[in-house]
Image (cartoon, rainbow, N blue to C red):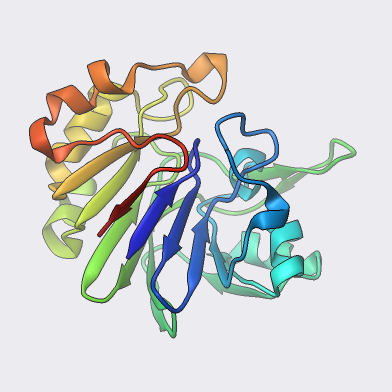
Length: 226
């Protein structure tokens, strides 16, 4: 898998046959160097309903006839907007032609704010375990530290983990370091920082430098092979 980071919590996964995106928040994401109109997505995986994670999903999905895979209530909401959606939920897994998806716990919230200010409840937030070609990626979504991350490390054994470090809304660097230890991935990458003033962090000094050779800061647009 080739994984490209596009700032905030946005991941683009190229499997060779499919293009899979996680939480494609592009417009409003000052870190993103790609335009929505340039995105080719076969599949979009969503962790939760907040606008900075759903982002441009509806526009992208309609332009590409993408399949959106999300927790049940969020998938139902996407379907109501004319998007092709597959509902799942925490603890459930499914093997698709593009890879295996399993949703994990995440301790956060999940709602979507419409353009008119209406707030729609979108179920429980989640993390995502995505597996393809014998490799597993863990995207924690927006979450606090929780002890079952030890089980993710023990049973899922992710090769790479993407953990939020922004603090205020999610784990900060200190808790993310504990999470990284519990998960035990070969490589851990920080996400969900510096998009807004309230989540400003120095990812190298506060997090990655303390992980030794098991941590890496990805710049927006930078890729790694898993």
